[in-house]
Amino acid sequence: MGYPGVRAWLPYVLLVPLAVAALLWLGRVRVEVRGTGGERELRVGQAHLPVSFMGRVDAVVGEAKREALGPQLDPEAFVVHRPWVGPVVRIEVLDPDDPTPYWVVSTRHPERLIAALR
Image 1 (cartoon, rainbow, N blue to C red):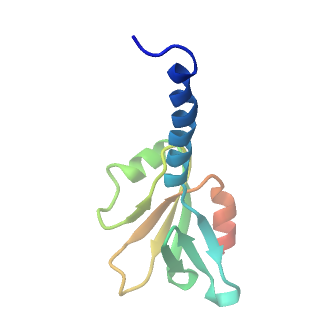
Image 2: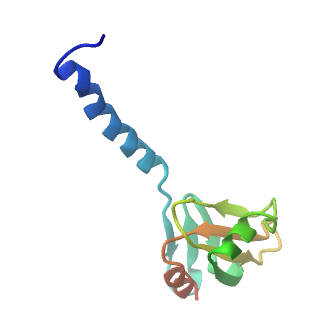
């Protein structure tokens, strides 16, 4: 039967925004290029990759993104995929001591990320 008045709708007013805020906070991942000169590195969350160990860098969108994250995906690749972010950037790793062949990172501005890595 429920309670009439404020007790009926107050939990929704308090808990729905709290749940939305928690989901947004848990889903955030910062993608940035840090450093100056030859000691720059790409940071994705807690992971980092020096620019000196990067090979080919490509933006992947549309159908190619589905292929890159599906049948063509290497199980050892480092992937930070957020489905609500459209394009991804694929970065080849040239470090001989790193078993990761490449990184696949979601970003809203792939052109700016590629320009910052060059």
